[in-house]
Length: 390
View 1: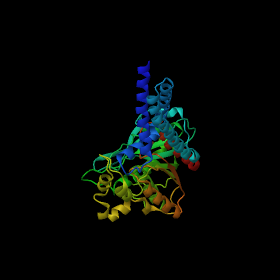
View 2: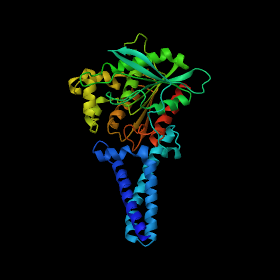
View 3: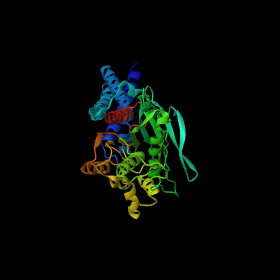
View 4: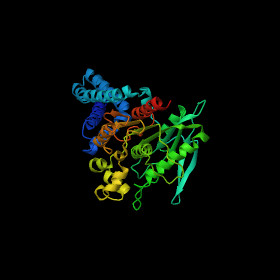
């Protein structure tokens, strides 16, 4: 029994050390090291699990110390107690930042994580064919709606290089289950020999116009359309919606681009230059490669292209009501670039709400369905949209 207790104390100490390391990582500059990136990536998804691990480890240390293993038990407690306290503070601050803004959180539900890319859409239709490629829309029909449902048009993220229109299917179905017609649209992604700075936004605008023209076929109300997007998709959502409100939206489709009733985004890439200069270079997803690939070269070589994709270029007082959810530890879409855009938008008269989520990094809501971050991302957008469209 003494051997078992000693082993438990050692495991508790190691668990406490691991959780404490992640706590420390979350306190560091997320653009400064891979350690800080990891520390801020885990809490919105696995934070409740880490809190439980720290709690169990602390209890094991107490048991070991009470059984006479004072050194091992004490070591476990030295590591697990600050880990437990740090985890509790981080989760409390994330929760307290989200709840006043309208988030709804099921604490027990955060422990039962699910897949983000299921279930499948009700149907897939072609929006347009460009350069021999079909750009499609995934349709998620509204559930339990007596009349025409409000419409969500969703634009996926992925650094303008990757991502699919069904990768957040769990969220899209979640909105549909709450009475929204959801239409997730594709756009052209850049390749090494084909930058899409002048194409992606036109494709997204065409998807919005197509959704308005076809919403009635799927049970939607074309007069109530919200535009949603994350990361690169958030950039496209804001740019298309703001440009439409200013009469500047361009598209290859025949139909005019409608002005959305509201826009709700998470960590939108509103300022490509701050991403280029300040984002942390994660292997395989380096900010400089993403921005240069999208623009067709360094921003300094293409100031006109930078202006065309920067959201600040489309600011007018006529812009639709907009929500931006900003993870303060974002290591890719750095917080200061988003904050500068928000200040400029509000100064221009845009009705813009900003919700800051501490200790959260990029895609904090997309790593697992039902996670703390996922619940926050879903419910904040739903709360905002219902206040504008219902």
